[in-house]
Length: 274
Image (cartoon, rainbow, N blue to C red; front, side, top):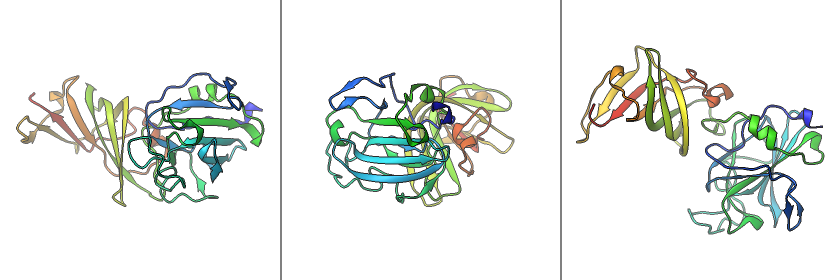
């Protein structure tokens, strides 16, 4: 049955830890998925294209979502966020849009792989423990199978595709890894996603991304006194702080995967003295 499961988009954007805990004893039986341990409000995305159903009626699962994938596989997303602050306040007891689920998401809505559908939390019987996504994989809508190998093979995404937008631009902060005549690589510590609707989300990442740069890429340096001066590519040294802005682009899985050279640097700002 597991052969029906396609290559997935990893269901959480940003760093998480997880183990092969499928089948481990739980108070209500055996564990039917893997727990992806992360931070409160990390973006949760559709593992494949399909249709979603929002479910708020489970005391144990808390804020829950079903994704009925185009492949026939059903995915359970459990313990989505119910907190209004950075604390475990459990104040959003009705599992709100923009808190548990993506803003504008509707039950029955069709989504694309990599599209934002919710946020990591610890609702239901996960209250009081580290925020995480309980993720289940059910080929052909049947019994749960171990998600572990599918997660290991899944595409890690740089950002989540917001609902209802055709273009985004990114601003990324981190440190320079390497520059060449055609590319600049940086270790990304934070990525911001801006849309034409002026909503911006920020995710802390810790991943190396390689951008193409062109003759039109603008290179600047911000000095310690706040002065911004022109800079050259050759001035970028490994380990120094950098911010990169992309132009507007269409948020497809190709750009979300951010393989080397897929994304272009429109502006590069180095920080500190050369």
